[in-house]
Length: 90
Picture (cartoon, helix red, strand yellow):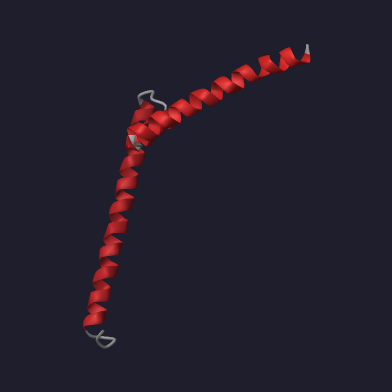
């Protein structure tokens, strides 16, 4: 590393300015994303479901299939549990 006011300072400033530009870009993209969600909502789409669709599309197909299988299994187990409990009480 060089002195405090030499090359190191210039390089450090370069990093800081690049990060600041990225932060500004991210803010702009997040604002744009909010606008798209607002537009979808304005056209009658459920934003919560839209976000869920986006989340699911990011998942690997095998992960999604395994999750859906387990979810279905658990739901069926819960649905049949009261019937088994009622039979046991008789």
